[in-house]
Length: 296
Image (cartoon, rainbow, N blue to C red; front, side):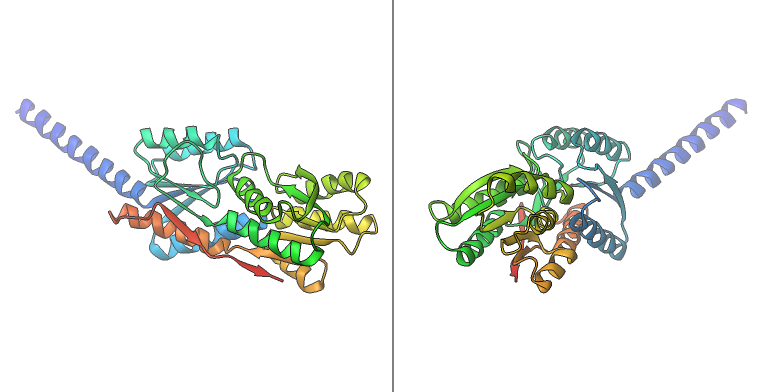
């Protein structure tokens, strides 16, 4: 009798464990990770909000992490998402090269990765969802050329070195203006408003005759505007990228000439939709472009 009871207890315990595992698997299948480079940037806050709204609409839990522009911190956060056994990881890399190892770790754990806004160098992702940053950089370059005229001295404020958005926007811009504009200074300000201000201040010291500035994002452009105003150079044409609320307001006020409009909320929403489609066994596109436009 004791043997029968022991066997029955073992069977029941096993069944309970299996049921628990089933619940855990089911729960993790309804979780999607979003590893954001920084939430100290309105663009990425809007992207996160778009992703969160879509996840709620579709009945999924979105686990969001903020790396504060630190690739090492982001690597740890991706490890944590892997431990949480999320079904898919959406990654907006701090650094496109550093993200390679993170994607490979996720792949070993059987978790697909979708890159968002910025790509991943050297590792295959399930899908890449972003605006065409090369086309956007070219759009900005063409507009700046039209406004300042051939031969004018201009400045390029670059984003975080190694970030695909910075590389692509710079590529598009320079292809559009090569041999037509004189780029007298080209320096990174890390997509940051305060750094945009200080870098622009330093550039102005040796280049008071500049006619225009292209910044790889609006945060740097807004910082550059403050530096130009402080130096009494209010007629310098400034073009940004992202069309965040502060930049659109600056364009309307006449302080910024134009900004290339991405749609961060749509990028976030489409990323979650793509993740859910994959979870449901549907095929997804390797590249999903999000439209751009110039706000001026």
